[in-house]
Length: 269
Length: 346
Image (cartoon, rainbow over all chains, first blue to last red; front, side, top):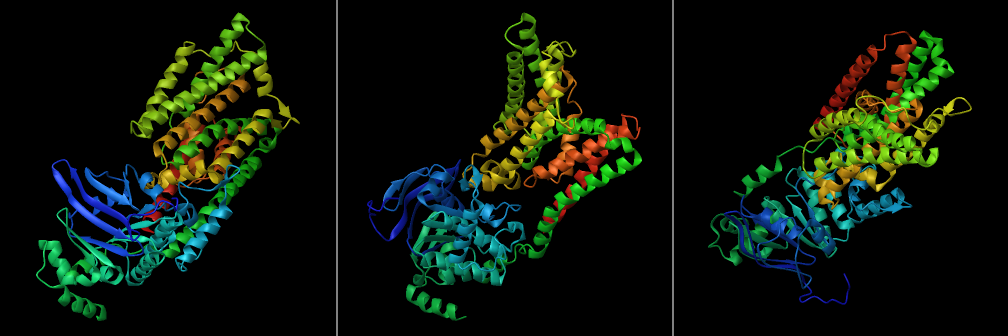
């Protein structure tokens, strides 16, 4: 992406305006606005069926929105395929991770983008880059980058999937329930990783059911309910109760001030 | 409420164990060695039972049998690595040889061009025919989404019938004799030219599977097609190419068999399906896809070929050959399944 093309708003990486998506008679997204800033973690929350997955798939290029506009780095874009999204620097880490169990870490990280020299795979160069990327994300628990991913723990698999995204110069990393199947220590590791991505200046969109995770890792929270965006604020404007209210009824009577103090409380817990 | 949500999501599945994976990895790399060892034991056993097994005639016989099976098995390795199957390779061998011989006999009867020119036309015709059958398989499997088993069972029937139709079920022997000269030439009496040629093809296939992008995509397709698609690889086009490759290799095998016999028979290759699939599976390539090596297939083919010729050398009636290969195939698949179950548990 040439540097000369300056962005309309240097802090916003991705902006959605009035994005709608229907599947037959079912409208899963209705006029959704969403802003994802650079260097921040935005959490997308909502009950089952709220449209979180549909929204993510629209950003990842798997679905194309029926209507609405998507602006990436200040430019209007159309996403027709996952490849389009990847070319822009939008990488999605799905819940099922989609790793090849029999392949090792290096092979997985380079799948589809293998480096070759004289027609043969350039294993040394790929190994080197994989190592550097993992090290830059402080992923140090992996014994060998030549072990098959089937032998990794859940958190390590998540780390490999994230590292794969980061290695391809992602600007926006979308993570779908990254801690869903993980134990306490593994969750810790993944949340640290998420924070590190934001510290590197990437935009991060994380979908999570887990309020602990959301409050711990997010800078901003966006709440979807029945396909509509009901709130989108700095994390300070929320507490758990407000989010639950918003997720279930679409509004909350609690005030931001109360929420703020409550939010601090919950962090102390 | 919040804690409820948290509990739900925290305890879905336990993370997979680290140790079992490492142990299995060790087993995988050991497996090729095991197969090599088994092959050696088999050779020694037959040799002790019948010392003529170590004769030059026996070696030439074994290596020729092995070559035919190996060429077909190489293509089958790629196919099985994608978690597919190609049941048509053996019949494709006979059909493409017949097609090549038909082209040669027509040119030969009108006396068009030199022998070498005619042979070249025949070789190209055979390989193109085989590639077209592979392309038909690949297109139906990749784009029409018909399961590989059904598509290749169908083309198995079609190519068997077509091979018979070409010359009314008879073999074609009115082809230049020069093809048989090359087909039976030996270097130093011990190394048949076709076997040397097959060795080169084998090395090329081994490099493709283990060291190229094509090979990496082949293995990952069988492992997780979803991740291949998400990686932006054109999965359908790749599957198509793999079946075309299997067809081309069957065609080369057809040419080599034709060279050895100096004629083309519609029934040649008909028992190679069984042998080739058995060789691939014995060689450690998983029918579940995602795991396989050419070296394993070479050892697997060696085991099958030694079994086939060895049984003759120790005077077992030849009808027992296919019984033995069939039993070995089932045993190899059973072992593969045990490994698959272990993987599922990991």
